Image (tube, rainbow, N blue to C red; front, side, top):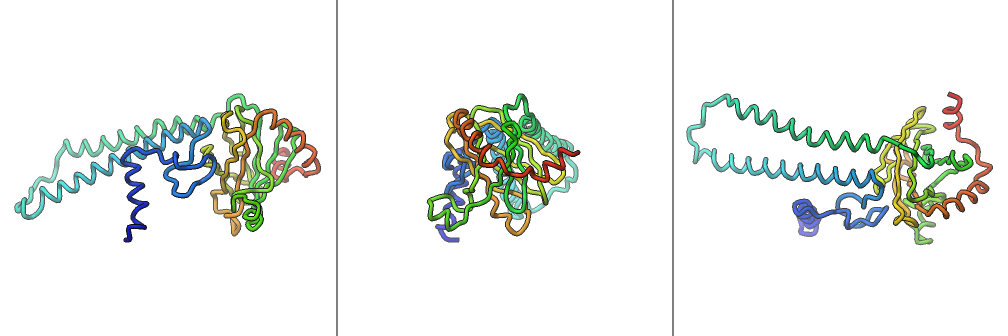
Length: 283
């Protein structure tokens, strides 16, 4: 293996062993070349998710180092040269208890914060507004039921157009989602055809959009991220154009959001209510 190919691996190993925060190399809301680790956490759920990720990573490093040390010790201590007559011992009660109890304790260390994070991401207390997300082949439809119930589709910008206009290829869309900062936002997801997945790394959201079912989560974008656009993509294999249904979320101040809502109510006033919403309402 050449040094050029080996360097990223060595860099990643050094970052893990030294506790380097890989998100520091990631631009906010989007991936970055040579990025290590997760994107910068933005929402409260993302911050807690980053802490859990770091915990599990360190556990993996510690376990790997211990197992490697034991293997090297066994290779040295019990080689044929140093141990010509192997032991006939077949049972060791203390050893059997240890290698049963220790993995259980490790699983508990992982499970407790994992369940806490799952509950934290699932609860929606006192939501200030609701965004309904509908996956379709191969684009997203968004509905704002708390702001006039207008609906619009969001499709990827043509790649040549994106490059010509200096936008992000395969990530920018014609109609991005607009959300206000410092607001608890309920996200409801469903699908109009097959299973999709609405994934937004910086907000630590990755939730399936399933036909005939409503999945729910929440997010909150801090005020310092006003004016930032966050990017994500569908993360469920949903057909031939799965790679071409990106997600763009623009965070704005409440004043900017109210102005955008007034404009959007006129722009999307003639949009028909999605069939998925009609079926859900009828039920």
